[in-house]
Image (cartoon, rainbow, N blue to C red; front, side, top):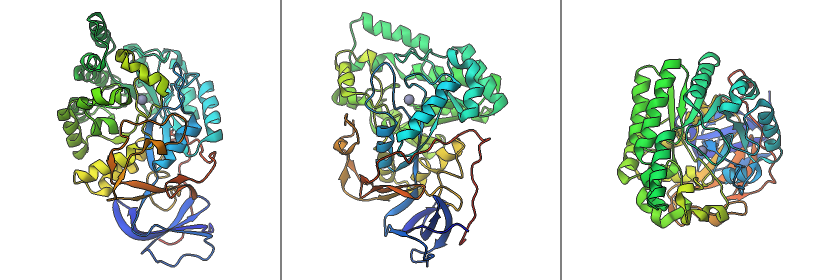
Length: 467
Ligand SMILES: [Zn+2]
């Protein structure tokens, strides 16, 4: 029997989708027992006891969509800084996309990246593979190293990541149809976008209004429709990243009804900010797909409520301020992306509560649902015997506000700076080790480990005590 070295107690522990008083026993980084009641008697071997009192004890959050380390533009964050910010936001597991320098387009680069990232990461992480022309023969190699999904980028981009053609998509989807996993798609129609962007440029329009005009909802909807058709043809599973309008989600829903294996995600910024805020927030809120109308925001919340959106993520893009401000001169060229790995989950939970959701309903979208999607359940995403002892301990109903100065790293900025926030992350625990306490990082980093997302990997082994 594993010795219990940590006990986490609380009145509101998230167990099986409900907040209940419980005492959670941890040994060697895993949950080894869960007892009803906050005061249950724990083994005397426990060296540490964390009593959360009335605070919520949730599983560590999961962010399935982050970028650390973009090429082309020098990002402020590598895995060290990025995962530090993730830990401050209650995340214990993140999955990073392949646009790093060098691009993760081969198995060898995937391997090099997972080694380099593990040296200084604060939280556990997975890596998506790449689906782009240079990587087509490398899908199996990336898969064997832990990539469950492969990212395809449809529009032209400044990251030297060749946009996926229909043929590339067909090959990738055929691969996952055979081998399992899925293709992740950034869906904006390349040809349509070329036309609308050059139309704006020729008319001398390069401001934020030109971004909204050139990247209109139809640019996304058209691409989503097309990708779903290819998925249907090939039988491969597809995951649509950062859907920004309800029409896209409806297409995913309709495709599922036809038997297409499709999932999708929404970003906090598309749920909290609308395009009216773009002129004022400027570069801080410039992303692609861009912010949408208030009606689209409300439509997304409705789809979320109806269970049609699988996960919430940040699409964290930590650009340097010196690069981002260039958008004030020419927004058509970006850089597109918002840094929010620290803020996204508290902001999403806060807004969901304001809209009358229960906390367990909201928490599922950043814990159990992403874990199920990404092949890391039951190890991540739930407080259950055998799972990693990952926790986010949070307060709700408070009177806080987003403070970008609390970010870790040199470039502190946020489109949400100063926004009232009722949720505060007090403590983050990774495999039994406290990373964040009292809202502050208390470790040096380096505890994070790479986790294979591919189902062939051993997921869980445990011996339990208690019930
Ligand atoms: Zn992204």
